[in-house]
Image (spheres, one colour):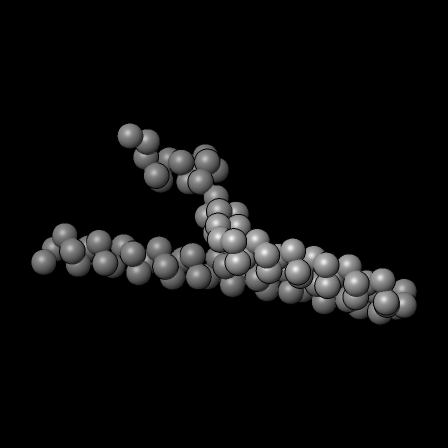
Length: 88
C-alpha cells in the first residue's frame, strides 16, 4: 500500500483538482459559468473587458486561498478525529 503522505508530496494526489469535477452538478455548473463568461465578454467594451479580467484574476486568487484554507481546516479536523478515536 502506498503512503498517502508520499503521494501528496509527489503530486500524485491533487485534492483541489479532484474535488472540483467530482459531481454531475458541479460539471454542469462549470459549463454554465463558462458560457455566461463568454457571453459577458462579447458584450463588453475594451475597458470593461480589462476591468472584468482584473476582477476574474482577483476572484481566482481569492478562491485559491479559500480552497487552501478549507483544505487545511478539514485536514486538521480529520486529524483531531483520528487522534480522539485512537486515544479513547
